[in-house]
Length: 305
Ligand code: ATP
Image (cartoon, rainbow, N blue to C red):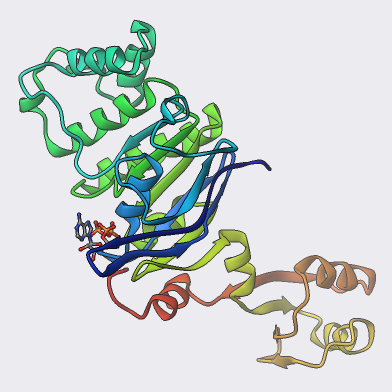
């Protein structure tokens, strides 16, 4: 998979405070990258540096294979973003706001504008002035504006802030669709673990300006496997296979039907050995540590829930 964005020792110092400290992150094409960290961790500052709104104190940013400079206008045209609260011309309608943005970006395509409004379920409201919009509607309009120019990378800073559960679900579906159907790469920040967990392919965890970890969700899930549990009516035969065929030692018989395996072994291997030994399994499943425990431990317990 090719890399869309890479940062090298990215650092921002405000007065004598390091808001972002030697961050090396890598976002691959087509993935949803969840940027997770408590308030004040440095997420917004990183996003502002990526979009040239803030100048790094040191370090480099590579976007689409090019090093970002204050003159990288063409590179920035390939990005859509909402960083902090989206600002609109209040007296103008949704459509007029999008038109203005299109002109500003040198992109005029009425069809794309219509599609973008449709995408975020704002089609019926495109003639209302934005001042009559709810917060959720403004968030959605912000997303329509950001995706209207069909960016390859979409950067969203805490996009679900202030939305009700229904609005959150709707947006989540939009993000998934953009990734799946448009092949768009998404960088989404949040301080809410559950949100990132449901959406992201890769998670970057940041605290006090330091990127503590960058890891795929698949890796986290595998790493957090606690044990595998088997249920069978043929317990003795199953234990025999575990011991003599698979040579496992770390397992426990819980009752007349249930065995827990703590050894690192794949479900596939266990299934195969049981099938070869003619043992019928009623069920086989993996139990995980909760991801919440894992992240809370990593971050130190504040700010993410
Ligand atoms: P939040 O979700 O609360 O915005 P964040 O993870 O996005 O948190 P940042 O906004 O990037 O964090 O802030 C990181 C740190 O840098 C904070 O301590 C913040 O107070 C500080 N900071 C941000 N912008 C400035 C600025 N313009 N001048 C001085 N300090 C700043």
